[in-house]
Image (cartoon, rainbow, N blue to C red):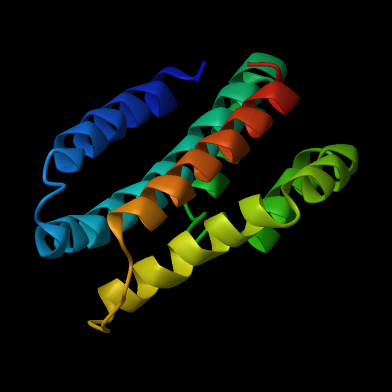
Length: 154
């Protein structure tokens, strides 16, 4: 991660994942933590996307345009892959096309699953997410965020 805000969030999550890995003997405890991690990973995705595109606007546009972009990004929530692609297309249709191709499959599924499971958790539904599954989703989310940074050349 190159964006400071995204990097701090990632470091916090990396540390938490390491701590929870030590509970390997207690699958039920790990499962409870997996739900919490899912909420945090979803937040990481939202915050990172806002931070990356906000930084891009600050680096490339006038102060007034950057303020507008950052204001608009505040409403960006529930970032399923289709929504990320729509936002990316607002900056560059070429970027969106490239991102769609490279994220199709496992990366898209991870992003969409994180948001879907987070929403189920928020609405009090039972979810069967495991620590291993959320860790894999997280690793894929990091890849997507790094792709966005690379496109913005941050």
